[in-house]
Length: 164
Image (cartoon, rainbow, N blue to C red; front, side):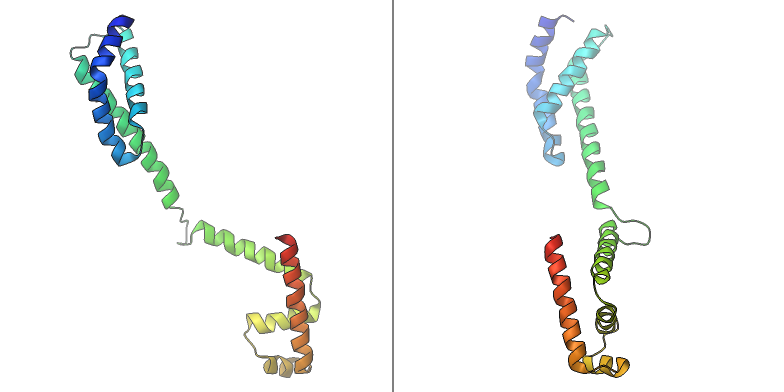
């Protein structure tokens, strides 16, 4: 098929191909014009191979449908991969990363504290003890524990502001 002949064919068949592509495009979010361009390119390549084509209109529509399905599958597979980012154990990857990041931040913050500040924070935050219970356990006055915890929190807040 010659170039001029194909141009006439493409002008004649383009509206049909656009109609098919639009039907698929609405469901998959692809551009109908892009699909038609791909279809016409594929059709041109097929005509240049000198293969005997009985019904070029039917072939063009079939090629367009195949390209639409191919685009749809590609988009669908990409979307499915994003939707299912769960890994073994049923925990999402982001949750695992968040836990790891929080652990790293906490270790970094706690390493900047004194031994007593770390001890009091652990008793207060991790074990949920009250100031009275901490005072009883450590033998230190409640006011001393309270001021030590306050200083530790202030110091950690300053570090957080520095990193952010």
